[in-house]
Structure formats: structure tokens, C-alpha cells
Image (cartoon, rainbow, N blue to C red; front, side, top):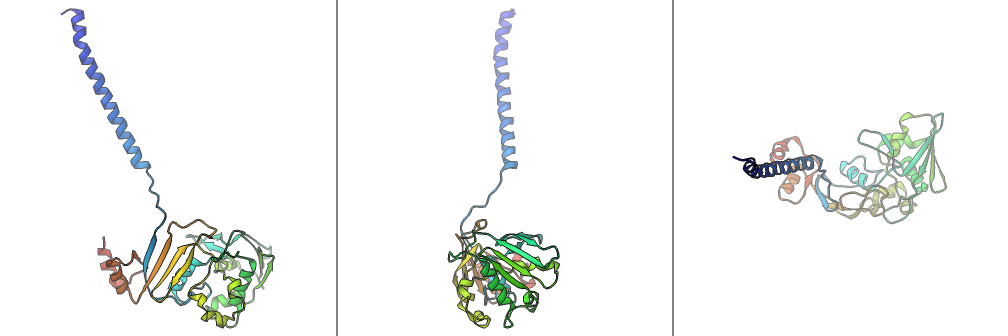
Length: 280
């Protein structure tokens, strides 16, 4: 065989080798890209929609200074109202209605500086007088809330400086005081003039006006509907709304879930755990 004939025979073989190598390279690149996508894809929750939850019990006071005796009240009030501070999931104290605060060297004077972009759900700005009014409610001899809260605030002197500064003067240093400043603040422009006894009976406790991420739009013995507030100063919730539906016991709540009337249950008692565990 001549050298030219040998060269002609080798050319198709080389072309096939090139094709095979090229196809192999494409497959390898495709596999790597697919693997990269599988490990780098981040799922982000879509915003919108309404979450419907079954709750055992019923609300009485959707009011942060009167809600401590009823878990249903406390849960709803925590979405509707905000305090000067808030606690994160680790118990750290973070700013909320207050952007910052100062504590005097002797530990008896606390000065809070309010944010200027906080509004009540009716569009009225949150001001220092709202904080002072809330403290006066808790300090009242007629206050029907937890005695521990009443005792803490009873001897605290509150002073406002304009619309954006509020000071608390303690009779003596009390290191945990800052953790109590997450008490939800009430709107003085709505409730001023009501006695504490009248406040406990007010329609406000059913259809409150707060400053939190959700506003109450409907409330009756069977359900409370919330919508996300366009005036909220913090990060906008993913949900457009939350609806709480009330049931007499866990059995009724669980049956409502099975019928598709609700999307979740606030809590279950031990006797229903096997049935709940059996749900996919």
C-alpha cells in the first residue's frame, strides 16, 4: 500500500475520532451544567395569597395590653401591633417602633427615639404620646391585665419630648427592663378619653387599629381576617392575608383540615397526633 493510499484511509478514521471526542465533550459539559444548576438553584417563595388556619378557642381582646390571658388574642395581636422593641428568635432585643435608645450610666433613665415612617392602619403617624398613653393604661389601678406587668410599670415615670422621643425614669436600676419594651403600643388618637374599664368593653378589642404588618378587616365569633398593611414600615409580608377560623376543640379543627376548609392547624393535642402523623 502506498503512502498516499494509507493517508486516504486514515482521514475518515480521524474524522470519526474528532466527532466522538466532540460529542463526548458536549455530553460532559451538559452534565456539568445540569449538576451546577441542581446545586445552585434557590427556591424563593412567591408572594401573595391568604393562609387560613384553624385555631382552638376564640378571641376576646385583640389588644396587646389585654391579650396575655388568651393565646388566641396574643397570637393575633402580635401580627397587628408593634412595640418599641421586638425579640428575635434567639431572644435578642431589636429596634421596632424605636430606631434606637440610650440608657443612662446609673441605669435608671431610658430614652427611645421613634422612627418617622411608622403609621397606624388608619394612616395617622405613630407618636410618642401613643407610648405614654399605653403606659398610663397599664399603670391604672383598674388595669385588668397580668399583675406582673402592672407591677413593673407602676412606678415608671414616662415623659415625651415632641413627637419622636419618649423617656422612662425608673425608681431604681432594673437590668431586664428593656425586654419589657416590646409591649404593643396603642393608638392614643382613637382611645384617648376612655377609662380602662371602658377600654375593656370597647369595640376596639374586636376591630383594632394597630401599626403592625397586618390589619384586621373582619372579625366575628367564627373568624378573624387580616390583610397585609400598606402602611407598615418593616419588610412587607409574603402573604396578602391571614385568616383565623375558630373551633371548639382539636377534633373539630382537624376535621376542618381534612375537609379542606383550612390550610393548617395552630396546634394539636396528644390524642390526635397519630391521625396528624398519618396525613401526607
